[in-house]
Length: 169
Image 1: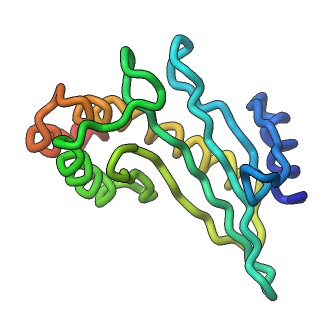
Image 2: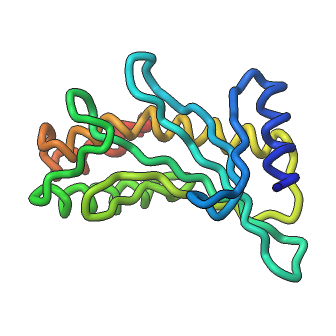
């Protein structure tokens, strides 16, 4: 059981943010919070997973934030990036991460995801809420272009040129 995650769950509930605590089990080696980060009501839930990772012999600990980012409808939630588009997606992500306040977008050979970590000794409620709001804003801002590139709707080079416009610069 993670006291940090339970504290964060209570904090989120106080701020009307629904989160579910899951104990470590056979499927997940660490306890985690799952937070619904869906951007549109008609889509399948986007679940942000928050894990507490203790650092042995230290007061420091890590909060890891992870969310799998699906391809857009009509693709199924477990659909994979077509192989011939993977390099373009990875190039776009590399360019995108260079200007973000927190780095986290990434892709494997088939999936897009966001993973970020905070290394903390202590934290305030405001820090956690701010970090979650920042992740939500980045997803809302960047996910449509990432998805369009991952299914071949947008040209990678043109999308890279438009990255500053995503943030009004």
